[in-house]
Length: 460
Image (tube, rainbow, N blue to C red; front, side, top):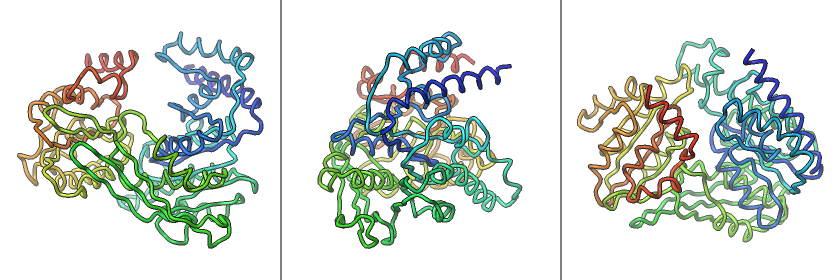
């Protein structure tokens, strides 16, 4: 019965969302999919286009319900039955009363399953993008795809699952007609293979010089408490698709410690900016001035006793890339500390992925603190075997935060990363921050609804 009601709600919201979109028949819908980096790419595209065009963005919305709600200009408050009734009543009113105009609509399209309504086909029944971005395919959220592989070899099984995930996400690009535009990451072999025969006009980005936009370089700098990330690109014109656009672009983003995979987000934004009629100088200025990330994604927060916190507490996505970045930071007087939480929704890949993270973390950090059953089961034994005095496990984030706060000293660099589901590492960060009063402004999931969820989780 609950499932039938849920489907009714989705179809109801979809109906009114599609009516609402008809008011902007000429707007260009940009769909962004991938296993990681959708939000940063969405924000990068918005940063480039916003100065010249009216741009609507799917903030906090990438799902079968979230996209429809975003189109209608509605947000959930507490996800209660009354809250759902509220948005159902408001949906037709919004269609009758809201006449928001925009030139572009940039939408995250998250896929958690090959089955409706959490698959790409259902999302495409809500919106039909004319521009599609395919960033990557990875093992994130692989739980719902487990049944598609019968392979017993762990590595081969992982490869097979990623390919199945790629096929599902690729439906976004394959849905484009010949008048569409596709932006494809050619560093991902699955994308290159699956999307080679698409109808739409396509633009590639990646590390190879055959790409329409080549990623040249990535650097991070830490000077005292000042942190910045720089990226260099070469816009190619040898295939004629970007005629007259051949140029080198260098982008510097201050205040964020960004790993190399953010280059793909900026690459997409540069290509879309060029296709929208902007020049290189305009794109560079727009990215450097406008780009930002939601709370809990690689932002920098001042910690106690002169320490610095790299806040990745929003989710566990790209944990490996972030740890590799920490490992490759220039040698300095920084003591490197990690607070790592479980990586959820990995299905049968859970053991392997946590063991990989444990091995990498052992080589990177001076001290490691773990939270979550998966970290305790799979990561803790590996780190203890390497150096038993290097790691501590805690039952919850608050206990971990209390311990780390006691240890912090000047120039410590603390990296925080983990899934949100019952982990909530941002609660540990409250205890580690220099000014806890800034928590509501600087940390993710601080709304009354989220704080209520956390209290309920802690009471169990």
